Image 1 (cartoon, protein in one colour):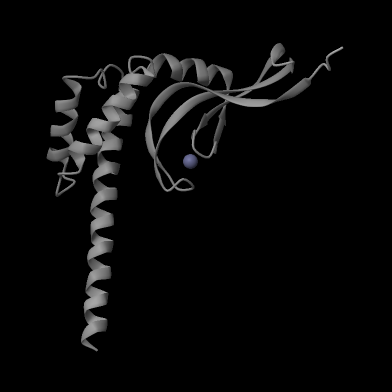
Image 2 (cartoon, protein in one colour):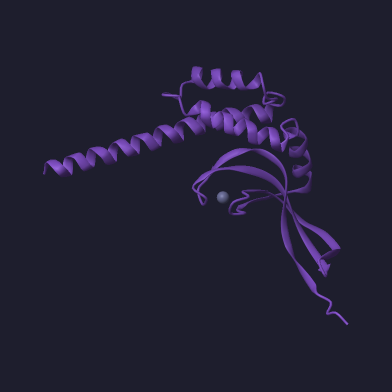
Length: 164
Ligand SMILES: [Zn+2]
């Protein structure tokens, strides 16, 4: 008789992308997923029992996040639904490229990029999406400018050291 293999454990199920944020522990921009923590028991890889243990907004890279209530989960899922996961991913890629050419993070620049993106993606469908994507544009530009500033500083330090 073949041995029966039991197994159990928690899995974090990714559901809906809310947007992208800088994750300090991953050191990069990561999607923020509305997630469900599910406890599963399986026999020979066939699930026989499932129970939702909690709701989270979490990073898929490091699984760090914060817990939310079931009501918040449902509410947020509705509000972010117009941007499906594949649309979110496409839009993020495009935004990264657009923001890479920006030299300043002014209100006009941010507004301009947001408007341009809103022609293609439903990022202005809800207030929450609008806020999320405006902030993402600001973060993408700021992070890039900050990185450039640091590189310049390093170059100057190296130049000074060479002159000494
Ligand atoms: Zn992370």
